[in-house]
Image 1 (tube, rainbow, N blue to C red):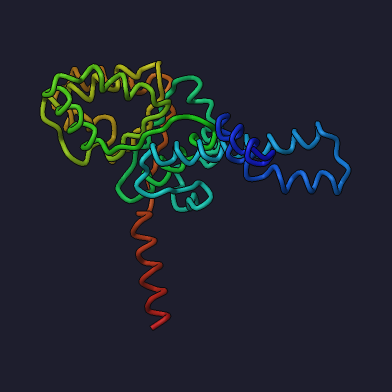
Image 2 (cartoon, one colour):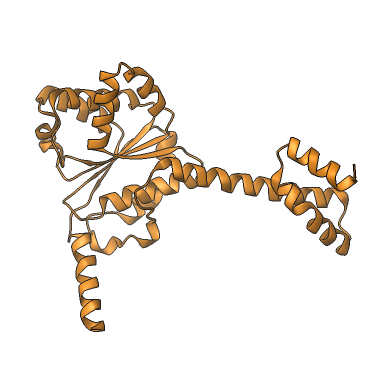
Length: 254
């Protein structure tokens, strides 16, 4: 067996695909620049590590299941005057995840809550955290199905593996009593163990209309707001402004 074939075999066994692709070209560059063996190896394995980190990041992004990837640099903070840009940028550093704190985005429809929640989620993925995006309705449906199939405990353990869960659109659709209780339990299980980002078009005093039980809602808010970062997002409808801009652009082009 030739040296090249033997090396390819070993690299496959060791699962070093980037090294396999790069070692020959990097060896030529090392020879041209009179690099030491050690410097060559450092460069070679740096390529492998970088590729693995990027693959892991892409995998985390896919598992996060964002409906659309959004970033902070495309969020128009000037349209939401009640929102502190500095506070959002601080949250993007990820300390709230280390502290197992929640982030609650409260405001009227169309003000960019989902955009901001997704952007924070993407930032957390970049920092190596496991993130999952789900709408409140989809989450409740999954919880009810898991209960019916007697796998609720297994499902809850699976969701606890995520460092951050983004629960979007809480309050758009009221739940059944059973659904509200299951969502309460879901949030309670994550309390002080993992972080949850929630977006809602309802003020806290209106959450009872979703859960249907005053005591349960009060207990939930007590847990959810404990050490939470609450972002109030009131202002001109973000989506309406974008639609108006597109309409004006179309009219100008026509």
